[in-house]
Image 1 (cartoon, helix red, strand yellow):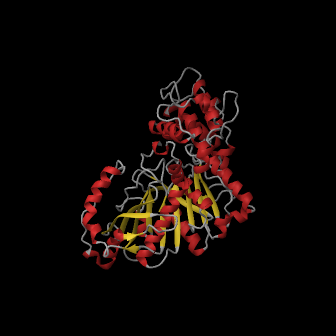
Image 2: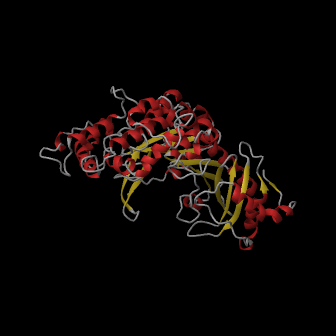
Image 3: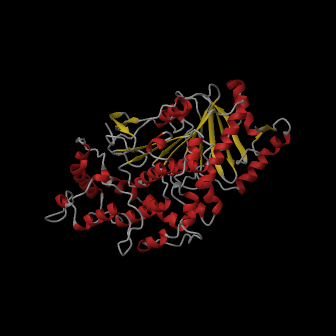
Length: 513
């Protein structure tokens, strides 16, 4: 329970401007820092608004596992279906900033925690009705986002440079601490604890979600882990491997034209494996790609692949290998993922993302900014990532305590996703099965959906928009587990072009109906 000190400390109000000025010059400021909040007139919000503003002067420093400081608390008027909310910003020790918003009235008794993405480092600017946290607010949830324990861009890893505490915060402590702080704040405001708390993240946020189930099984009643980047070493080795193979984006290398030609051929060869022809593959693991039909016969064109391009594609399907042909890490790319090789992995930001990881995060001690990874030494690098794997990889398949606590877990991955490593989540699920005592016991609390035609966290040629939150909430509250999920493929304006139903992993028939 927080302790209000506003009325007993008028001095604090008097010196606050000076303290703010000192803070401005002594603390790091994020690139997207907001202007200091203007004085608020809370009278229009009545007592709930006044109680919201009071949170700014409430002491949450004794919250379990989360030494918390509130830096802003203000009521915000209703907007486009989003109710009037209390917005609270602050941080938990060490540097995990958060933004919590909850309805001033008609709270549904639940907390929705948003995961990060990439290297995290900022707070989502989703205060408006169009932000990611808007839908949970419309449904009455308290919604919280966080910065992963540090300031950074989505791709830079300088924050982790020989900083073990920062890596721990990013790896698992930060999301847990923010959750504990949010529970304390909401309980103080409403006078009752949250009935249910959910975590929802994709990519790095999905990794965080899996980490919460593994390390903090008592924190959450339900978890959504989208495209979870659980095998940190394998993901970055694959990312660098593919980026180097495709560094040449001219016609002589492997460009988008080559990717489209190969993808069309793969679909033509393997779409029928699921029993219907609809240009969306459901069984990519059974696809054996034959390059013969598309090898250039009379010089390179946009409709064929040169022997060099075929060699690149073979190496991507096979996965990273050393100079002797020994596998370094499992491939992250199934047949059908060819477009994402170019759209996700060859852009400059992806290369910067991988380079920064190897400079600042992969090794202990880290080599630093003047060092450049050597593609020929990937096998050596893979053997030196024990520290970062210890803080960030979410590979422990023992979820028995999470299950015993009543937790429910939904994970999903796109078959077309070559960015995050869909093989790793399949391997993880099957390992969890073995620990949990078989498929039936596992499906009592953990469901995996492999989505045909979906790229990383969304996009692609298949259905990619699903209401995972409703499925999870229904499972937690009503006990009805999701045997299938129906989603849609968004058109240019976001409206559904077609729908698809996806069954849980290992359902028969496999994939979609």
